Image (cartoon, rainbow, N blue to C red; front, top):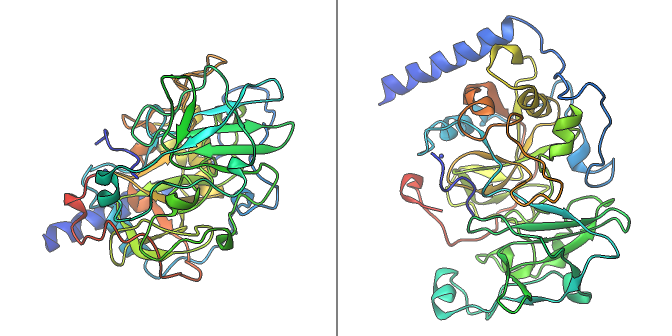
Length: 374
């Protein structure tokens, strides 16, 4: 999976380019301390955020975090991305639609997806179907009549019940012609919980995908974890870490909060790694809309977490294509034609990576990411 599929992902020249990028970035940083991100609206009311206040996702980074010894190497990998792009934001495809539900929402039994022979070959498995988590099938799932998954092939869909403090998420969710629903994966969890799954819940075998056990993200984290939500940006503050993906994720290497990986690149960036935008960077030096400054400031204060493979380097935002409130990102955030993507990759750093687990999905092993399509 995937991210920015449809979007645009020697030595002497390369070294010179890296030097020039670093000089540009640190020149920006030297010309002024960062200013607080300007709120999009004059009145700031912090919207509800996913997971408990003590959750990993909701903790700001230390003032002087340790930088990983391989940070420069990891960033150099991102600079080789076949898309030629820096970090951008997925908002209209390969993003996450989130629908609020309550006791009045129709409930449906979400069916399992059974694998065709071709899918078994592609996923290198003899399993008959993808998996739903332990609690997901315990009761019908509330799904609004107007709900629609993301339009791209991942077809993610999330549902949140703030009264019951319960969330549901799915990958490859779709409505069948008879009005019923089917999804490759399914997870149910507490919105006031840790936002990190217990790996002991998944009897996943080394070499296979975590999708056979319920999670809809390849790293085995909730698909709403780290999601850029419209109401947060409109309120002027994102008070949590942001989810991102890269094209150079490490083969069989992951770290907390990830519980698995589909990384394909030996020596790449482990899923679960935290990437931070230089906190001393003067954001006023970039062409950022007020909402984009809110996102950039979150990348400085909270950082972003590598949660998936992608055809580029996307951050994940709330998909508003079928928003029941009629909200739109237009004029607030841009995807790949300005805004966050204008910040050079040399302005980012990978923070010190903790304990690395050497297991994971082995289907996509390659040393030539330029030839790997998502």
